[in-house]
Length: 113
Length: 386
Image (cartoon, rainbow over all chains, first blue to last red; front, side):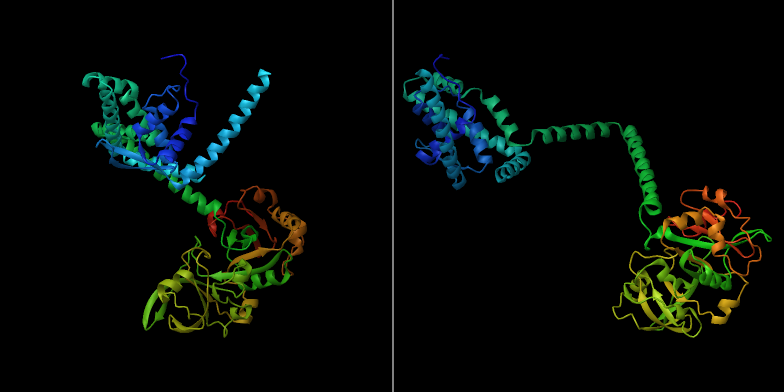
């Protein structure tokens, strides 16, 4: 694998999945993985199988729900969608993430000076 | 908190639906790989290459499947269940060994259970009386006749009641065998049909000495000890339930006890017993007042007395020192000192059974503390001569 690809930080995959579902509506596992890869412009190194660990975790917490449906090109697929609790969780985590990111950013800028 | 609960719930249900969920996940992975392969094909890959690349990008479907399985259920529990199943199979293959193991367990559990039952009844469960450790059985001794432990004559009990400074009160009762079981059988007629019941006859102050209150109605008064006031009956909870079907209007009801019409004045609580669980009723002994204070023989009253509060006096009395025994020596006793007091030999007999000499001249009395479930003679004779 290329050097310029980063490992996904622990816990950030969940947030990415929630955000993706919020933006795109109900989506299957492959769609979510593809979307995250697209958005990250292939910077993130993602074994697509790992997305299912995140999906299970979120389902166990009742933040997303799933049901079988049919994809655009007529394949059976399991679709995931955000629940109400999931939407709340997304708001909390996004805010949290932005706060942390802000702090890190400020720190880095300070040391550059 | 709520999140944790829902995770737990989901894991528990996952543990029970493992196979179905595995199949579901297999289908999901399959569809994932197919969709990915579709995309690669559209970008111009060959069928074969598209599928291979998809598997590569997915990153080990089998590994993912195993991981998912573990995350979904309760791996620890599943492993334990596997072990149990393995153990059961092994046991089934070796019936002889299994039999010995089961027998060993059965005997072990049985022995421990019965031991605990006894310990609980005798040592742990408190007796259903107020401060049961202050209840004493007083009995007579007579060195001249070699009596070491004899039921009392009524007049002696009357004297003890009148003159002692050690007990708040002394009650007497009859109708027990030498193991404290009730052996006075009577027939209670209910709707003309006689039913056998066991009980004891007692002085009116028994329940006050024991410090217990009835569940329903009242207990006896002292004047009900005597002939003429003695047509009163207190029932045990068991007798109330079995003979009268728990009749809530039982208090005041007239019943016939072996031909004598009596009035039920009270019912005792479920956990109460005296002298042990064989007694289903308590009747008044109905003795004549003058007989009670004058009869020096025969001896027929078993006693139960409550020590006055105050640790000092009790200890002194228990150790049989002269001072306290003389303090309640009746005028009838001719000898002036308590020379034959039991002292050391008695107090050292056992932790839960002690006796002390009441007085030296006939009738001399011995008392033994009542503790433990055996109210009567378990300790009889255990402490030498008083």
